[in-house]
Image (cartoon, rainbow, N blue to C red):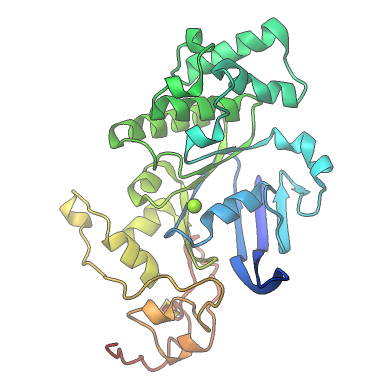
Length: 334
Ligand code: SF4
Ligand code: MG
């Protein structure tokens, strides 16, 4: 069975310009050699601290940002080098849900028009048929259809996210990339939106890439989880396996910071030293080594690859490879 999405050695970089001539002074490697697959109907969670490249990766998958190298196959087709014009017919199959629904909704359009716009863009249902479909979508997403004539500011944060979801689903996509879809919402509303996403997935066979820094939300919604650090995937595993047995020191540290009410799941707190280094000049070797409690000498020289384990639980760390990390680095207080 061909995966819906197949990503190989994907890289996305941006130039940083400076000086009076605006010359490129540096490159940020936001996505730095990422490979993974997503099966149809599956949810892949993508986690990591802010600035790790998750949003850029999400946008690159949908070709909203152009990759610098590597490949993206969508539904068996290589979309890496398609022009924007060639991409147009595929656009309806790949949609995005944003963190802040308000800033992604045109404030001067009525909600019915916002949700109906994708039909217009893709030359689908018009007139009364479009109105009927918009009403059905609103109802399905928990919005009263008689509110179609109102403007986005008349809705609450949770309702706006429902509008964003209805709009994304209007043209029946196969793949939805949701970038922090609940992090701007009140905690009381978050579970409602997660449940709506799950119900819609089951009804419509949707495939999700769910980007979040909220590890509890990801555990709830994702089938598999990818952990990102400085543009690379450091761990990729079935959700159950990742949460029960995190193998990368970074994943362990992230999970140890998540409060758990289940005492059997309580973990010793691992506190990471220092901040995420700048992606302009990532550290050599394993880019996590300056913050890693387990770093050894080898980690300062070599960059570990994500392993392909039989149980589908891959990790990019020398603790889990033959040869190990080499002599442990002495931690010197700054
Ligand atoms: Fe830490 Fe070394 Fe593993 Fe990197 S490779 S996570 S520095 S132990
Ligand atoms: Mg982001």
